Every structure is written in C-alpha cells, then in structure tokens.
Length: 212
Image (tube, rainbow, N blue to C red; front, side, top):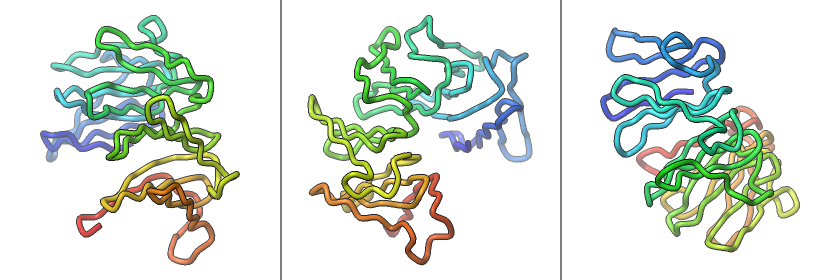
C-alpha cells in the first residue's frame, strides 16, 4: 500500500515490516515498538485533518501529532482486520473489515447492521452521494435505504471487487479478480475481461489521468 500525504511524504505499508515514511532522502519506520498494533499493513488513508489512518491485521491506527491511537473491537470496529478506510463528503469515516463494515458516529465506531455488507474490500462514493462497497459477492451501491447489487448475475466479470472509481463522465469502473468493468449511469454493465490492451485480467487498482 502506497499513499502520498499533503506534506508530500510517501507512506509505504508492508506485509510484515510495518509502515515506512519517506520524505526526500529521509526514511522513517514505524513498527510494534512504536505503537503499531500489527506489522501487516493493509491500507493507509489521510483524513481532512491530516491524520494518517492505518489499517492492519490487528486493528485500526490513527497517527496524530506523532503518536498512535489504537482502535479495535472494544471501540466499535466489527473485527480486527481493517482492510479499507474511506472518508465520505460529510466527513464520516468508514472502515471495511474482514467480516463487516463500521462507521464513525462522531464519538466511536459503530457496526453497520446489514449482513450483505461483509468482507469489504473497497469503498467509494459517486457524485450523486451514493456509497459503493466492493465485496467478495460483488459491488453494492447504497443510496439511502436502497441497496443495489452488481454481480456476475447482471454482467460483472467476477464477484471479488478490489477497487471502485467513478470517472468524470459519471461511469463507475470496477476492478475485479477477473478483469475490469464499467457501469454506466443507467446501470448497464460492460465487462472488459479478455479484451486486448489489459496486461492481465487480475485488476487491483484504478486511477484516472488528467486527460480523463
């Protein structure tokens, strides 16, 4: 996992050696001895206040003013394996874990009580305000009380959704374990699996260039 923060530091999360921060030629490391709960780093996120949030196999860490604040099941997380962290436009922090989904309520994390939203692998928000959750069962679009599932049953190339991105045209791109997909604003699903031009059908991340 790589993340560039507002101060141009590059944060590097590793599988078994904690997290590193690179600024120019200087590299600082953070591990168990520094307060990290677990050396396996799954996700890194910077919130609008400049705190660095780190999801590990042991819980959630907030690095603020040089000190770690630890969050786990006692603080409302659904379980200890924090896979993805996302802040929506209202400033609400969402944490996808191995077994469920948690949301910050202003005082603590609380579990989202919907059995469909489990095994969260990716989170995004489209410009219409809808939340998107990538799982091993497909991609869920949540708009108010309405939940729509996009899966292989309606054209998705694979149900394991690794990344979600809405482009400037309003199309939502879905990266899966077997190819890339595009969901049009009307809900039509187009799969790019097996097409030429993609180096592999295993898609892990999506990024949009300045030219769209």
